[in-house]
Amino acid sequence: MNYVKTFILLFTLTLLLIWVGSMFGGPRGAMIAFIFALVLNLGSYWFSDKIILTMYKAKEVSKNEAPELYSIVEDLIIDAKLPMPKVCIVAQKVPNAFATGRDPNHAAVCVTEGILGLLTEDELKGVLAHELAHIKNRDTLIMTIAATVAGAIMMLASMARWAAIFGGFGGRDRNRGGSVFGLIAIAIFAPLAAMIVQLAISRTREYAADKRGAHFAHSAQGLASALKKLDSAAKKHRMPASPQTAHLFIVNPLRGDFLATLFSTHPPVEKRVERLESLKI
Image (cartoon, rainbow, N blue to C red; front, side, top):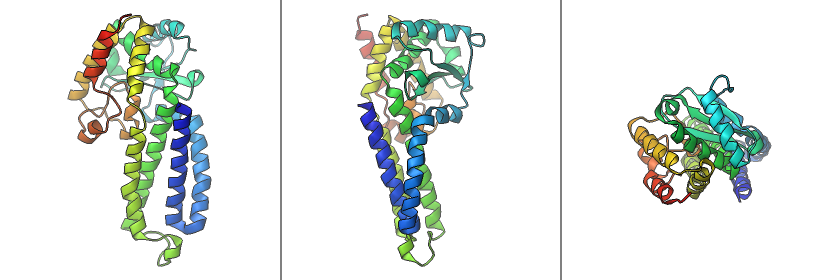
């Protein structure tokens, strides 16, 4: 199912890029946009995880550099029956975590410095088990590509906005796609399209990862306790995260943003904790 969603997202982005290309340069612009879309689609599939890791300046660590963190992951992958993912730390004081990668053989789990200082060992184990569950469920493919696609769409919106301000492209020749009204339409539509991309990421994946992660950790209490702490921290401190990548994190990093909360792909933490506490493991 995630592969179908991935195809739909990339196909939608291709159509959007061709439309924008035609607005900027008519048939020739549409052809250039089509070629660009093909390159972007391939890049999104193969390199989106590297883009995300670079965006957050995630540093891969060895067992010598982070022995406790590394050991927890090593223990969890035995029950999860997963290959060892990259283990990364983000130099960010706000506690949070995410996983990325197109498949289990090209995956990474990332935690912020803040989460290492906040959670107990059992709580951290619960969080890492949750992220490994995303990898096991192959959620990371759709999650990571969606982040890249949403970012590309927002880039188009920015381009269209500036083009509209300066009168569009193509001078007075409307046949070359210089319609300012068309560019304004793109500037309005593109952010809405990015929002649709966000909403395409089902909230049910978080419940599924919570449940499976609890089984990997042999306890639901550690993750339940961790979610309470992370939710409390998110209410006090807004993490400097991109709205297009907010769905990657274990809790919404933009909790203080009204619109981000309204259209959040994360289910309420209270419901997640309630479900975890009702599990019998």
